[in-house]
Image (tube, rainbow, N blue to C red; front, side, top):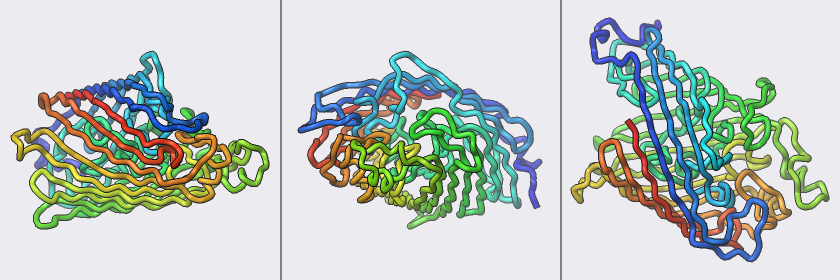
Length: 423
């Protein structure tokens, strides 16, 4: 039987009825130049370059009725990623939107309602956050979220590699590269999600809109023909008394996508995938785990695979991905709020996907005009300094072999700095 999300006994507890949060993230990032015998429309610029991105969010939360919260996020963004966020499938700056701008732009990136229904009598604390109100919640509960938000707000979370504003900056570390997660070119969509929490287990399901064109800002209005569905099972555990989690995610996307095979069958060169677009199904499976192994030390991994027959639609040009990393808090050198972290990534695409790029085809982020295929391999390391509890300064380095899966170009040395504050 469903119970109120907050029991009468907890009504007098410290509960937020509303909240206001702000965050600002500034990223300065550049590379030192790369070997480039040729370049295409979507190539990483071979000359040394430096680019800056800025984001600012004002977030408002309001408790509506028992168990219900409303959240709004007004976002401003400005700037460009290197080469206009092109040239690497695992792009180095997670704050670089695919729709860059020289002037400040703004929109309502999130506007959603969350309703929670509790089961049983066991309770725990719901901590305050930019998208959560502080209070008490049932350990066993059903959570329904409806509106505009990021699919990544709910799915594919990871304790050590989840947020480009505070952790790793590479796209393939803030999310599983093989999950073509539903989003417009700013990273958000409209839809709904249901989460069932049962002690150590969480089952999640989501249904979302997808863009009407690849990397588009407008959503396809034909919601029964174009959609994204996500199913995730998470298990939280203790190993040696230390917390960890394992998540299995499966997804299916249906959109007006082009087929690599049909495009290659057309003799027109360079290959143009827009000529083969029809409503098609793309699917995949992803594994995601994190584990604390010592005080302030955690390791994590992601593995992902998609069927690789049709073009990338919402996220990036990756058909399979593997990452492994470690994150260390600075307690041992008397900087307990600092973080030193390192991770490696291997991104790959299917043989027919590679053949498409070899024939001059372009994707969301990659397209060198031709291709000498090799898996894209990236290492990222960063050191995040806690200047104050609300202010962090991070220095980041990334090294990439075979950018955009091309053995003829690169390697790439990427240096960056990130200033982030929030309250």
